[in-house]
Length: 405
Ligand code: SF4
Image (cartoon, rainbow, N blue to C red; front, top):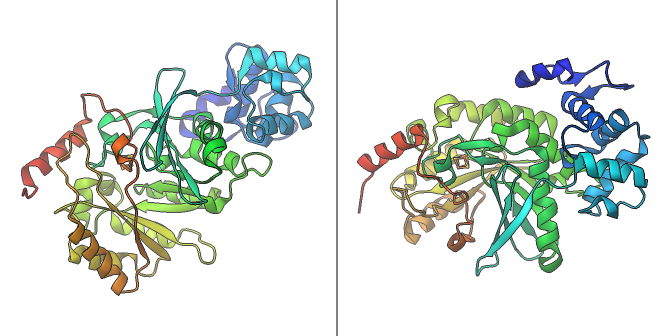
């Protein structure tokens, strides 16, 4: 075992110069650890955990393979989307059999797709430990979108969100994140056409699993593999300020902020993350977020009846977002079991939107897709009986205080 592995928990140092592995250049800790396992054959390695450069290091350090093997293997995984090592015909038979014994292509098992009449499909996968991962395919004319998960459950406790009721079970690995895209391309791509957009808006707070999400983004955008444009990948966050900064420094994908309230009081009531990083801290991070020409941050605003849907809220929304290149995405609340919240009336939603339009704010309303299959925004996951304590407390408060019809 590489002794640097002990420092993984605090993410320092990022690189390993382990003497037990012959390397000529710096090797990330997770690659060094995997190379040791590959050498020993003691544990199965998930090959989708690694970027092209990392696969090269891994095969060289773990199996003594020449440098070009990493690129070949990467292309088999992500260009050809091979499912078996036997398909990888330009790898030697010996390497294929070693990999078949010590590594695997795909960590997720496809369980099924639940189609909604509007064309949305919720894809369900199981992990080796039995955890269930949900991914949503959203068709649109020539621009299909895949909404992927980054965690099993979520720790953030937003009180309007169905996933929050699960609490956090665990982070998804890089391979489990990337494999959702590979398998969705296999399952949906042939029939429904190209998946053009990726949004990290499924189960979990992506920036609470920022290491694996950033690594997944690097794999998804590699032009030797899945080759997604960085402009077609959006990471949506509830507002984890330090990780927003890191995302801006280490990737150049699009950013969406789940804002959902215009005062700290209301935001803290529905999004506990606001107690840690309030609206001003969040806006400050956004003002510093690197944007290239014509790029804009998306503010997502879930409209909830009697919580955040007044014209005063609309006016404050304009003031808060002023000076930040942005657009506003209004999302009428999707009802689900076990919530005290309701969807505002059409009249209220229209009035809110029109108020923004009349003041030249870039705003659009997201159509509710897939809600009959619980595949819509905030509806993923299978909550157990036990809600996390902080969610129960906030919900109880709302049940007591919310105006009822
Ligand atoms: S809205 Fe997003 S961040 Fe909030 S609890 Fe749900 S999944 Fe987590």
